[in-house]
Amino acid sequence: MPETMNVITIDGPSGVGKSTISRKIAQALGYTYLDTGAMYRAVGLYLVENELDLSDDLAVQGALENIRIELLPSPGENEETRVLLNGVDVSAAIRTPEMAMIASRVSALPLIRARLTALQQDIGAEGCVVAEGRDTGTVVFPSARHKFFLDARPEERARRRVLQLRARGEAVDEQQILQMTLERDKNDRERVIAPLRQAEDALAIDTTNRDIDEVAALVLESVRKGSPGRER
Ligand code: DC
Image 1 (cartoon, rainbow, N blue to C red):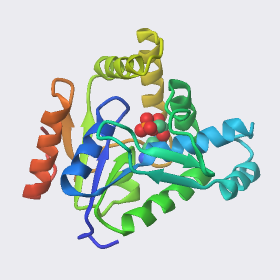
Image 2 (cartoon, protein in one colour):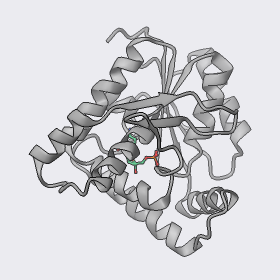
Image 3 (cartoon, rainbow, N blue to C red):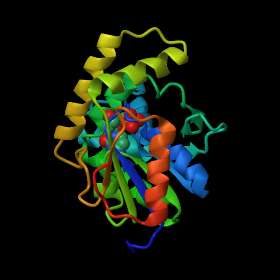
Image 4 (tube, helix red, strand yellow):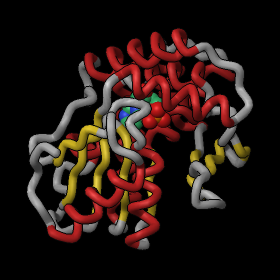
C-alpha cells in the first residue's frame, strides 16, 4: 500500500472518545469515517441471532459468506454511523454493552478478522479515510500517513460510557460497566491476532483530562503539520 495514501488511523480502548473524535476529524477534512468496531458488532449480532457455534470454523465461514455489511454516513453530526446488516438497519441493536462484549469475543476469531480487515482495506484504498478501531494503525493500514493512539484511565472511560448509555435512556450500573470495560480491554489487548496496541509511529494522546474538542484540535494540528508520533 502506498505510504502517501490519505488514511488517518485512530486506535485505542473503548471509551477514549475515538468515535466522536474520528467523526469530527473526518468532517473537518471532508474524509470518510470508517467505524471498524461497527463491523465486528454487526458480525457478532449475526452470529448470535443465528445461534452459531463460534468454535465451528465451517459455520463461521458459512456465516461470513451470507453477511453483507453496509456502513452509511451518520445522519447528524453527533450520531454514529448507520449500519445495515443484509439490508436491515441494526445501528441501535449493535450498540449495547452486551453486543460490545460479543464483538470483542468474535473479533478474536481469525476467519472474521481476515474478512473484515480485507473489507476495511478496500474502503481505505479509495483514500481520504479516517479509520477508527483497535488495529487500524498496526494491521489494517500499517502505511497510513497519520496514526493516533488514544487512551484514558479505565474509571474515566467507564464513566463516559455510562453517560452515553444513560443519554440513550438505558438504565446502567456504573460498577458493571467498569467491569465490562476492564474485561473487554483484557480480551482486546491479549488476543493473539491483531491485539490492541499502539503502533510505533502513532502519536499517543491521553484523553483522561481533555475534552473532545481539545483532543480533536490536537489531532488536526498534528495532521496539518505532518508531525511524527510522540507522547502528548
Ligand atoms: O470500537 P467498538 O467498541 O465498537 O468495538 C467493539 C469490539 O470490536 C472491540 O471490543 C474489539 C473489536 N474490534 C476489533 O477487534 N478491531 C477493531 N479494529 C475494532 C473493533
